[in-house]
Length: 131
Ligand SMILES: [Zn+2]
Ligand SMILES: [Zn+2]
Image 1 (cartoon, rainbow, N blue to C red):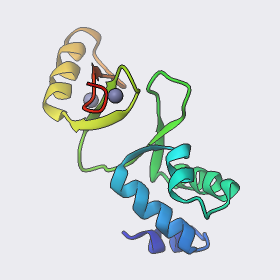
Image 2 (image 1 turned 90 degrees about the vertical axis):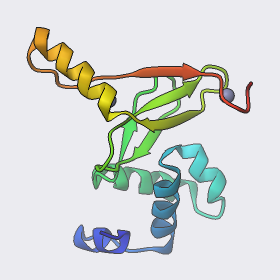
Image 3 (image 1 turned 120 degrees about the vertical axis):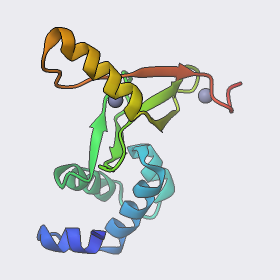
Image 4 (image 1 turned 45 degrees about the vertical axis):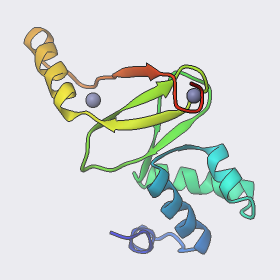
């Protein structure tokens, strides 16, 4: 479904700003408010934050816990399961597809603890920029 329909079906106004933000976060997939503020300097700060809240409420993005103070969000793509790799120097985050590994983790955990609700995989590296 495209963003115009999602907004329309949820009784929200379709604005160019909202469409632009949606297309941007869909592309970069992981972001924080600063990424949006830098990219859309012509959009009011308050409306950037309002759009983030709106998209969280609509289930299009979710806040992810990366263990630091900056609130990071990810675009929800239900078709792939992924985890994150984080640079230990600049804290930059990228996601990678890892359903095989996670399936194994859940399987072995469930042998012992039956019903696993959630899991978290942490991978750290030194990114290209910091090398
Ligand atoms: Zn780095
Ligand atoms: Zn996983």
